[in-house]
Image 1 (spheres, rainbow over the protein chains, first blue to last red):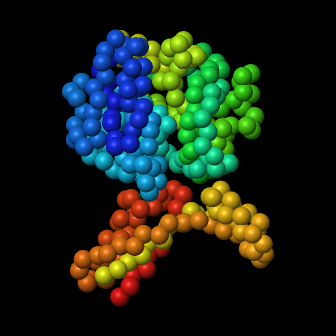
Image 2 (cartoon, rainbow over the protein chains, first blue to last red):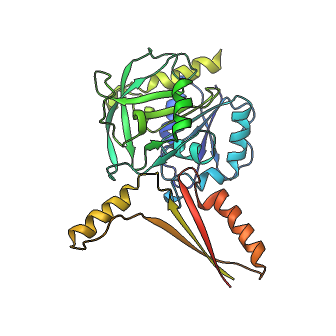
Length: 230
Length: 80
């Protein structure tokens, strides 16, 4: 698996992301500076890591979404290449138009940093094939602007097409109302139309090692590694 | 030429910061505040004197970067 982690000024999760990709695939990820205009040849997956690109100035992810490398990322996605955006990476994906909707300030206005249960909505995608459908996993969330919103028409299309990847839930899988940020329909992550782009607020790369309290995030990277090795 | 761009959340979008400010104003004893919406102001200094061109340029800037038109609307004031 050939992966590229994009480094923006203010990203801070690129090494965790690269470690998760390496652990799953055995191959080092290339760290690519945002000012580059091309991805390394043969890149299978592009990962936009978490952090605070450009200090969250203007809007989270807005300036990063207009940086030179994003044209190459858009071209990669248009060809069906895989793109994963985590946290700030998700914000960059919606700002760049690769995913619909927007991420607003958390409805309670507080930065949220805690373990959070997620429900895996489907397991027939390249990102989630090693999970079970409906499986409840526990990963970390750490964000101030994770309140997903889309207009009614977009939301209907996402739901009808099964493009919600993960929903916030409790340990029993009940979605209820108590998400960490007020996201509509408890949405924690969504796919693009062709299911080759995934944006999600939680941090699966945080939980890939029993030493740090859990491994529920590892299967996502292993799913990707399995797919791109085949 | 100077121009001011004002970006605000569309009225259909919940503005939790505006709500918090509204609550604070109320707790400070300011009655009669029916609502608060928070926005952003950009003051631009533009080269050239062609007002029509400036308007067109600023519109493009808003659509491309300054506003996220999914949730925000903008208005432009150009000082002659």
